[in-house]
Structure formats: C-alpha cells, structure tokens
Length: 166
Image (cartoon, rainbow, N blue to C red; front, top):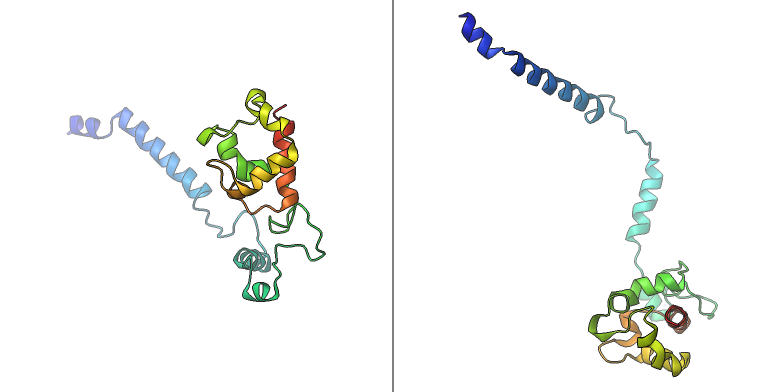
C-alpha cells in the first residue's frame, strides 16, 4: 500500500498541485474579485451621455430639408472642422485619413509622399493645378481622393503633400 501511496502523492505531483493551487488563489483574488466593485468607478450619467453621443446621427432629415448639416459651420466660413464632425484636423491627419492608402504606398501608380522625382512635374504645374486634379480626380484617383473634404481642407492636404515632396 505504501508504493501506491508514493506514486499517487509523489513530490513532483505535489509541486504541480501546489502550483495549480497558487494560480487558482491568484486568479480568485485578481480576476474574480469578491468585492464586486470595479477598480474605476464610472458615473452612470457619464456613461449614458457617452452612449447618447455615440448614437447621435451625423445628419438628420431636418438638416437636409433646411440645407444645413450638423458637420458644417454655421457662419459660412470654411474651416478644417467642417468635414470632420466639428473636430479640427491638421493637414497631416487629413493626409492620413484619405490620401495615405495610395500616396503612402504608391498603390495604383500614385506618387509617394516624399518622392521628389515623381512629384517634380506635378509641382511644376502649380498648387492650383494639383488642387484641381485632386478635387476632380485623376487616373485611378476618385474625386477628392474619395473623401468628403471641403475646398480648404483639400488645399491644405495638397500643400502638405507638395511641401513633403520637394
């Protein structure tokens, strides 16, 4: 009977069992906290406001009927925030949002940002010509690069790309 007892409770098996017990205790304290309170207290009203903000429509039918948009500026002056839901974006952020997919990789023959040789002829035509091509689309590039940027944002991103490719 002692040999069966020694095989069942060998020192190696006892170490493994002890290690598993230790892991279970740590998980019980850390993961399955019996206190029932989260580490970070969240105000329920803040959570509700956050959910409501995320569910808010970008454009409503009233905006369309009135010819206004919640993302457009009410003063008529265009700014970097009008096509981005009221959040101003830098030209680099605009580039990352709409242009990088092709101009960062050279996809569909797009000249890469920073490739002075590929941009030399284009830059020679002037920023206004580049802006016209970017706005109306050229080659495989769709109008405005597939974005909803306004004219000021388009000019800013074109100038950013020109400056980065000289």
